[in-house]
Length: 559
Image (cartoon, rainbow, N blue to C red):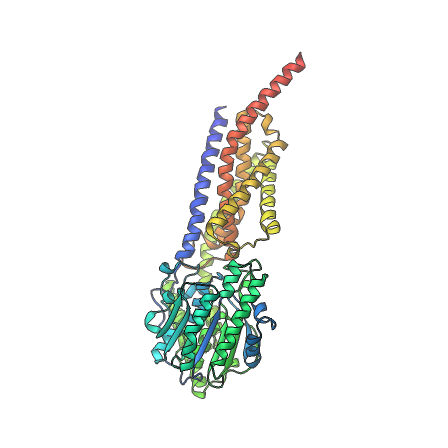
């Protein structure tokens, strides 16, 4: 009796500890994503020299927030955009997770992936947004004396270094009226030809994705059609024999509306470029980081110093001086970037292994290898700890086969089956942050679903093992076993993510395909632990009644 009581107390305290640990870990995962800063924050590479004369008299970038590739290609919805596509160069563009807007804006303007560009990787509130520390298109234009202008959502006011923006209009609104205001502010700049680098940010498509039913709704196509009309108005103000128009998006949307995760549909975007310096055609897929250096080449500015992309020379008709300058400028820029990154990681570069020439891919492969080597060492250390924990859990389950551990495991499998059936099949949610409409809503949904799954699974295991007919202490211990087994199975994605990504986001970004299931698992663990603590008391009460009832039946039979 004393031993069983001790085991019960150990189980209860373990469940309390797991609940608390899951809460703080999940909270830390959210917080560390919001707080992430680039390894290059304190030591950005220095900008290089200008490339030469500009091809474009006026470079106009239109960022259609949230526009999907399929919508952009829909002639019936966006005829003006497709006319520009036929006149110019087009490609499918690929980005990287996380696919939030602030991360996308930063990648487009800096030419570096979210891990490097030091923009927010998860969208921050206006007053929390840091200014870019890395070189960007607007800084490069400012150094060359090019007048710049921005009209769009007020996040850009915080992201862009204010000294690099000469003309601006920012709005806190995100619907169709916001786009009307943005366009009204920008059109006079195009008519006057004063600003030579202009960014116009249109937001109503993204608004339709989030708030009006997503890409499968009529509101989505209506918003895209209104934006298309605006694109036609912008194009009318330009002389595309002298000016260049670039139209891009920062991310896509899942069918239900939402983004931020790693789904292919949110990581592919349209890229259309028409006008001066552009060789028309439909081209191979490109990377989002290629946009900034390509625009820099057309403007003749220096390459953004932290860019990880290549100049899309096969799409461009550049001046001879720029063509001659590009290889050396690219080699210098990439070498400086690699050295700055290695220095931040505390590594000494072997010059004999450092790439040479202007092939951007070779430099980026070298950077990836530096990162992967360090990550591998950390993963091996974490894998050893995870193996010990898994071995201990399996040992305890095997040792308790006689006590019903097979029923416990069955309960855990039923729990996961019920939870994921509702999540993936009934509600058709994706295993990514794209399905999170808000932190509170996400946590509430997960808690309710996990609680329902726990109740059903616990009852199945308890009835199958006849737990309610055992002595109260034995019944309570059985519920502890059921609960801890559910936690073990729900925690498998957490352990896997721990090995791959660590506990929190630190010097490098996690694999979001594994970190999101881990986040789900942590909320499940918290819920199961709390439900299990309550179930222990319920089990003991029911078992006491059941045990007494069995004795009464036995006495009646003797009579």
